Image (cartoon, rainbow, N blue to C red; front, side, top):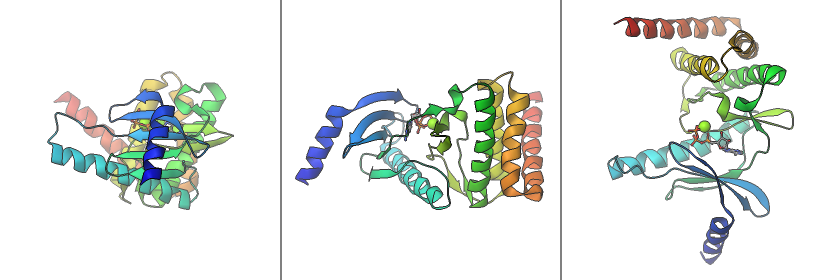
Length: 220
Ligand SMILES: Nc1ncnc2c1ncn2[C@@H]1O[C@H](COP(=O)(O)OP(=O)(O)OP(=O)(O)O)[C@@H](O)[C@H]1O
Ligand SMILES: [Mg+2]
């Protein structure tokens, strides 16, 4: 207990706020001499407090569990150092590197193919990432690390996997405008190489269905 309090005090003293997110904050800190990231999920005053606690706790637990599970089938994810379900906080390995969103040119094309392979591997193992954007991948020592599993789900449904692909396409269109013609095929070739042609055609077919729905909704 005393040890835990000392640890918490040290973490608080050494914390540096890296990012204020929609859900919570990201701090850079140290854990037993290792560079670490503390990810918190803050209370939402507009939400019923019982429901709010449940949602924040659920997302914290899900994120920590799926980060570890993905590692078990070869996806590069941060090591989880500690999870505090009461405060809805995760202490994890700090991955040094460049967020894919900030890459340009050939490196970005390569990273998109790697993200395609990662998405394929997650899907093959029954996991939907839920927030497949270029901000949630970090290139570190020539490998792509996947983060931010707070919205991930256990699902093997084609429709759910198509939602991941559709979101990634949307992000390429908005955050990487003008590079879409190279980035989307690169992502798709990585994805196809892992899931196989039949599954690829089915999921991609469903992406078109989702896009069709979007257009229909826009017309109405
Ligand atoms: N383990 C980590 N190592 C290095 N950087 C990290 C790590 N976790 C998060 N970050 C940095 O913090 C940013 C936000 O982290 P994350 O996506 O997990 O939080 P979020 O609150 O869901 O943010 P967003 O709303 O932008 O998705 C990442 O884009 C990355 O720059
Ligand atoms: Mg994120």
